[in-house]
Image (tube, rainbow, N blue to C red; front, side, top):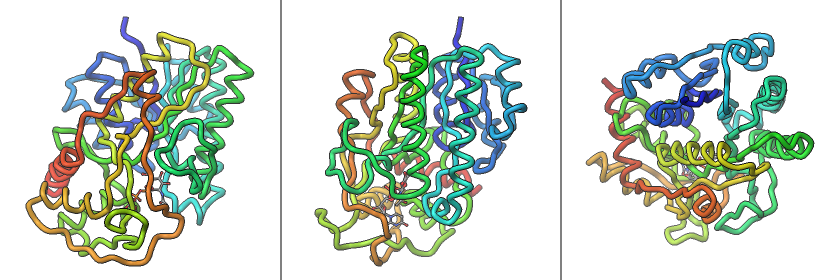
Amino acid sequence: MSKTVLVTGGAGFIGSHTVVELLERNYKVIIVDNFSNSKESVIDRIKQITYKDFLLYKLNMLDKVAFSKVFIENKIDSVIHFAGLKAVGESVEKPLLYYRNNIDMTLNLIELMEEFEINNLVFSSSATVYGVDNKPPFREDMSLSATSPYGATKLMIERMLNDIQNAYPEFNIALLRYFNPVGAHKSGIIGEDPEGIPNNLMPYIAQVGSGVRQRLSVFGGDYETDDGTGVRDYIHVMDLAIGHILALEKLQNEKIGCRAYNLGAGKGFSVLEVIKSYEKALGKEISYEIVERRSGDIAKMFADVSKAKEELGFETKKTLDNMCQDVVKWQNFTKR
Ligand code: UD1
């Protein structure tokens, strides 16, 4: 019998790619999403890619009565929890919104999981929990801190889940700390589609490449890195999606308690290296200028991925060039 996975935020960037991978592996999928930062068209595109069907509940997880229907109407085996607000800058301006939304929806989810005796949870965390004081490569046992309300919600949820698992040992939880997810599905028909001006590097470059924006601002050219620009650990979203399947399988086969895993490539690329790779994929130059550093940024960030490799068998397959090629394909599709 195939297992049923509830995917919160399954219409979002990482959620939708993970749903594709789950369906390809014959999991039954239920998506819960309110489409606050995603488009409904992604649902049909997932079906187009996989030729598979799944259930969709369009609802706000803060509405516990509406959310509970999903649990009443289905027999769920595991949950992957992606849903949440995620714009760092916006979280500084609207901390109340971020705390209320991200924390409350998670509490509703956990209470329902407890009530309906669902124990396996994969939580979408972030490398942002390593704060600004650690030296890369970041390891799961390093000290954690938050530099924004967004980061604080990830950190608080990690702590909540640790405490909850301690008190209710039947819970089995993987905290996945993502580094910098980029790329798109190889079909080019789903990808990252941020509302408004992109905050992150790859979607910004993509919009410069397709002519939506004129020029990329490179935040800082005087960091202690080889070329002076910031270094990050970019991971292809399909490698990341596979990381979720591996974590899910781990939870299905073993009691791990509450454990954190880094999901990254384990190496970093500078902003200028990303620009070069994108130019190669696009066959055209990306206009940029080096400006002031962005506040809160650090010079270098990349993962130690040995724990995920040893315990989950996780290894990235895609290169930076692959990531850029797939983003170009996705941009060409959205431009049509
Ligand atoms: C950012 C968030 C992080 C979040 C992650 C999600 C901040 C300070 N951090 O991380 O909390 O978990 O996104 O993916 O917002 N860059 C430019 N020009 C741009 C955009 C970015 O030069 O227009 C540079 C940045 O300075 C950085 C690199 O590109 O060196 C990557 O930036 P970004 O994609 O925003 O990711 P992070 O800063 O790693």
